[in-house]
Image 1: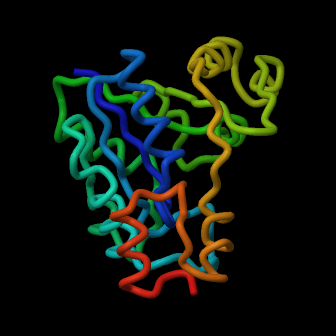
Image 2: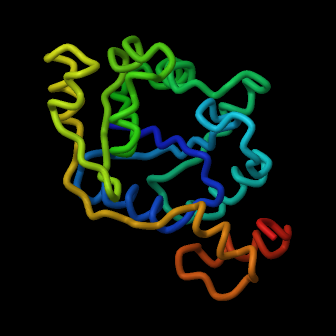
Length: 201
């Protein structure tokens, strides 16, 4: 089975995340996707984020009726340590030794992935799927500035042809500050949870 590992802060999860994941299934890139809320994102030190349990609950609500989606709280177990992707993937390798794991990242991350913790080991133990991001223009030449030709070609080949979803959790949080009006970029269950718990106000 081809299992996609979709990590993120998901603060909150929105239809951009969901539509992207559905597209990866519909286009037969993957058979199943596991959403992995980051417990302590190392790339966001000092930035305020919603409690892990609440972000995790919102993801659970968003995917609960989709059979090929699931949620993992694995990263919570490593608190207070940072949520390094390498450590997470290694844990999933133990859980799914017979399956092929694909790490789902955005094009913006592809251009910065050389800075990630134990990145050489990471790209050797799983496949990468890169989805397009607005205002990004990755190229083989840009990757070759940090990688060997072989690795750069492998990473560049990870880019998949999917629709761009220009939805941002940051923009959603800003919008919610002014009131809980009808929000077409959140599922009704997630929006109800946000209202009930007075989040982002």
